[in-house]
Image 1: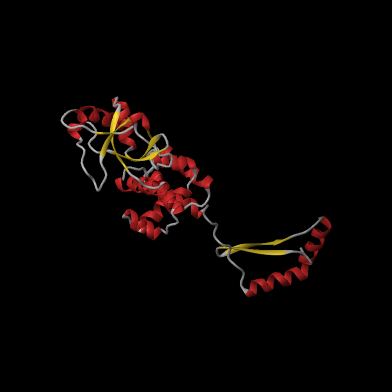
Image 2: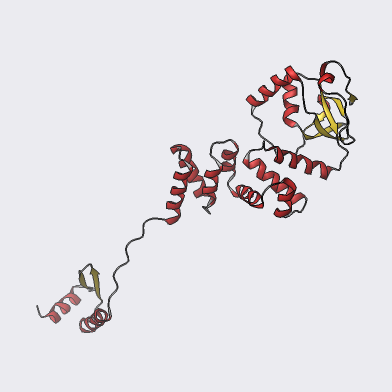
Length: 279
C-alpha cells in the first residue's frame, strides 16, 4: 500500500509531500508497481541503468514515478527507467504520483510522455505513433498537434515500420542509422532491402554510399545499346532478297558497316541459294 512520505530525513527530505494540481507524492513499495505492457520503450541499456542506479543511491529519486491504481498493484504511466534503476539501487520504496484516469487515458499519457521525453529509439517512437493512431483513431495531423511534432516527422517515422523485422532491430540497436533506413525504404522488395543491409554492415557504408548503392540496384544492369534500325530502302532490299532466294534474310548494321545473313534449312536449300547467286 502507498503511504504519505515523511519529512526531514531520508527520501522525504528530497521529496516532500507537495500538491501538484491536486495530486500528492506518496511512497509505494517497489514490488507493488508493474510496468505497462503497452509501454513503447522496449530497450533499456544496462550501462545507462547502472549509472542511474548509482545516482539514485546517492541522491534518491528526484522526480516521482506516475502510476495508475489497478487491482492489487499499481501500473506505471511514466518512469519505468527510474523504476528499473531503483530496483538495481536496492530501494524498497519509491515516490509515486497516483493518477485517477481510465485505462485508455493512462495508455495515451504513457505513450505521449515517452515521445516527448525523446528517449525512445527510432523504431520504438514509430511504434508509439502507430499505437496512438490506431488506439485513438487519430489522424496524423491530430497526433502531430498532441505530441508537438511536425506531421512530416510522424509520417517519416511510420515508414520505418514497413521494413523487415531484422532491419528494424538493426535501427533500434544503432547498427544502422535512420539515414541508412530511409535509403533502404526506397527499395520495394524486402529481400533486396536485406541484401543491401548486409552490404552496409559488412562494408561499413556511409549513408551517402548506401544511397548510391541503392540507386545502382534500382537502375538494374547496364542496358545494351539499341541496335540501329533499318531505313526504308534497307527494309525494301531485305524483302526483295527474301522473295528472290525464298529464304529468310537478315541485314544487321554495326556502325558504318554490318552483315547480311541468308538462312537455309539443309544442304539442298544451300545448293539452291548458291545457284541463285550464280557462283
